[in-house]
Amino acid sequence: MTISTEIQALIALLDDSDPEVFDHVAARLLSYGPMVIDQLEDAYTSIPNPVMQERIEDIIHQIQFSSVLQDLRSWANQEHGDLLTGWLIITRHQYPELDEDAIRTNIARIHKDIWIGINTYLSPLEQMNVVNQSVFSQYGFTTLQQQDDEQRFAYINNMLDAFKGNHFAIGLLYLTLCQQLDLPVYGVCLRTHLILARTKDYVTDFSQIRENRQDILFYINPYNKGLAFGEREIQTYVKRMQLNEDEKYFIPASNKVILAEYARHLMSFINKPADQYKKDDLQTLVDILTAES
Image (tube, rainbow, N blue to C red; front, top):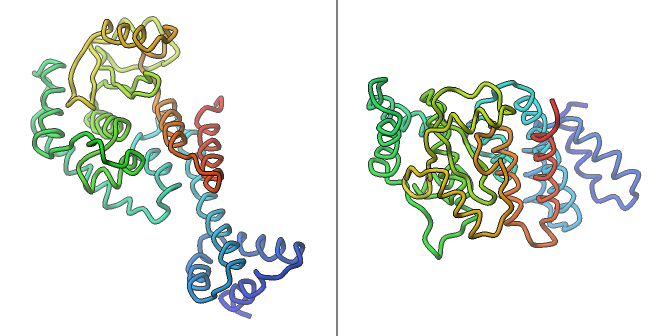
């Protein structure tokens, strides 16, 4: 029996009412990994059986999410994981068929245009103005209008297609470009907002809170066209929101911390009981990103 024939035979057994039979069949299909997805999808569209369709959906999801978990664990184990790579891995949770090459090509085009205009003779503020000019004027990335779907535009693929994103997506795009340009710019988790910090030197140890805070030249609000501002504005915001002043609102954070906050941000959009599994998945991604190395 060929592998393809065995897979077809297993799929035919997915409507078996015996839980032991189903568990054995599902485990066998899962063991094949991504190679069974095409046949499962074909079966889903050709078999008008709600029970089988639900089971096929679940198996496909488990296979795809297993790939996301494996890739994110590998990324998180790196000392300095590339931000864009980690971002794309998390995006695949929602968009398993994500065209990563197309996204990388689009990012590379923007990066090249900024790189041409930046040199070491510019001041830090002038360098950031070059980034602002390219992202917000040349390419025309904008913030969301009131009627826009914030969840949709929290994802990189939708943002790049429409040239608009919610505050986290715009912030991650800006941060990705700065890191690819080798600029000392880092994310700062200001509760539900992502702001950025431009430092004098590169951060080598994110646990050095006092030193890293003293090294900040200015902060950047990507959602307001890269507006530069100071620590006083953060203090004002914290007071207005009646928050306890926390060091993390002021200091650079690692890419793992930023992406964990991004995953939590995505969780905030999920409210339907039927989608609870997606929330649980994202929590698993958070746990990977926040686990002690």
